[in-house]
Amino acid sequence: MSLRKGISSAQRAFEEMTSIHPIFWHEEGIVILDQRALPSTEKYITCKTVAEVCEAIKNLSIRGAPAIGIAAAMAIALGFKEASVSSKDEARLLFQEIRNEVQKTRPTARNLFWAIERMEAAFNSSIAGEFDLPKIKETLAKKAQSMLEEDVRINMAIGRHGQSLIGDSCRILTHCNAGALATGGFGTALGVIRAAWKQGKKLHVFVDETRPVLQGMRLTAWELKREGIPLTIICDSAAGWFMSRGEIDLIICGADRIAANGDTANKIGTYSLAVLARAHGIPFYIAAPISTIDTSIPEGAKIVIEERGEEEVVCLNGQMSAPAGVKVANPAFDITPAYLISAIITERGVLYPPYGEAIQKILLERDLCNAETAPF
Image (cartoon, rainbow, N blue to C red; front, side, top):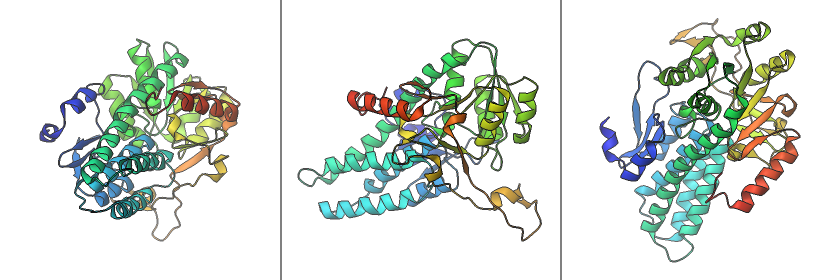
């Protein structure tokens, strides 16, 4: 596509690490692979304003906790790109305005707020001395781009650690999309599967359709087919049947937020799979970067669950599929209790219960190693 002409040579070198580019910084704006159009059309949209990036997050043009975080960081950098503020106070006010707009887009994904916090730290550092607007712009743009590149490296580390849990000839069930499209370009849960495949392991992936927006059937299947990984799409309601027949060896999902005790928020339907996995003696894994862990939230019950519009549930292909006027509930996520999770795969290793202790330990190790310069 012609937009590729507007990226730097450094970014080109980075993008050779992955073949799917859901988001990237461009001289014309933030370019996003529109996931609403997949799998039939591979279409890119260019967001030239903060408002356009926020709308892309809200309408699911870009989705997945890590990808949302990257989009949030780039939105802040974009907001300053054409700014003409003339003092530190004006710059602080602008940052606050952008932050407030971005953080209202989707409440459940921890990575969005984590990204804003990191951009705020970079912003505060850039105004520590004399006011220098070009320096602020450059600092924010570089920070956003570095977070994209870091995310791919972290995802690859998650894949390396997680693939050890996958045996040869393994039959895997996954839910929603936690692949390259949901991240900077490699994937968390799907990154583990991708890493095992690259190790030469024979795999077969069962892909939940993932109602109501069909991220599994549209997006995960698209990624797997693109890589030549064998797959079978199943209805969400068929998962228990395949488990009962002994056709699933393990389940692996991503996460949008992990509480301090290991309780995990992920796409609606994840909790049901975890319960079924326990009933059938099947390992249930979560793959997510440490940035998804929110130690300010002690347990899953405290996680805010996004409620999305009713049209996602009752409208199919633009047509109403339910009686007019009926009540519709559409929670985007559910909470899987920590006791149902066999392990949590992170860029720093695989965590096992008790998760409260394991999380505290791994975060302490990260802080001691300075996560900014050594993310894994």
